[in-house]
Amino acid sequence: MDFEGNASKGIGVGLMVQIILSGHGQISTGVKSATDMIFGAQDQYTAVEFLPGEGKENLSEKFKALLDGFDSAEEVLIIVDVFGGTPYNTASELVYGKPECDVITGLSLPLVLEALSARLAGGLPEVIAHLKNVSPEFVKIFSEEFAKIQSVSEDLEEDEL
Image 1 (cartoon, helix red, strand yellow):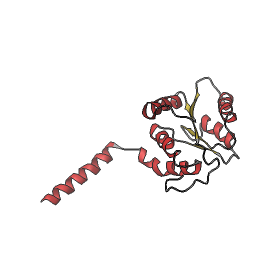
Image 2 (cartoon, one colour):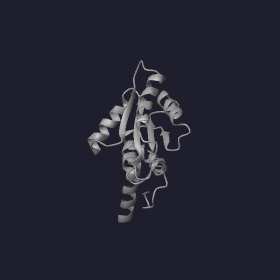
Image 3 (cartoon, rainbow, N blue to C red):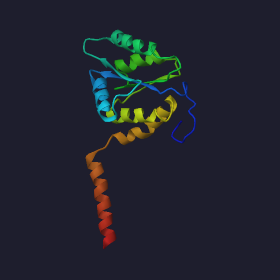
Image 4 (cartoon, one colour):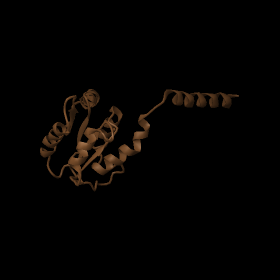
């Protein structure tokens, strides 16, 4: 089901989207640990580290081991840290030509929490559309947020006069 209650048209309808996190160093396992604290352990959700001293071949083997263990009808979303980095390039090569798989960048705790929630309501296309829609909300700048609050407060004071 998508966010409007319509049946998903994604591949593997009825199966939850597999989510794989990856990035440089231990960012993926760190974000997974944090989401486990917030949501509890999740099924069909794992992290793949890319550690110092490892190369693209090592990372590719890790991804392949996971992907080979999935049913071919399962949708897979790989969330990586940065565009053009080894995790992104490696994952992109492995999912090329597989419409049931995709890769997105911007690995962060807010993004992953949204992905884990969104996959309960839809397939891969719906999850990606949702993440694209909400991702601008993840960056908050104190001075801008404070200015908004201050402006509202000033407007309220003017209304009282």
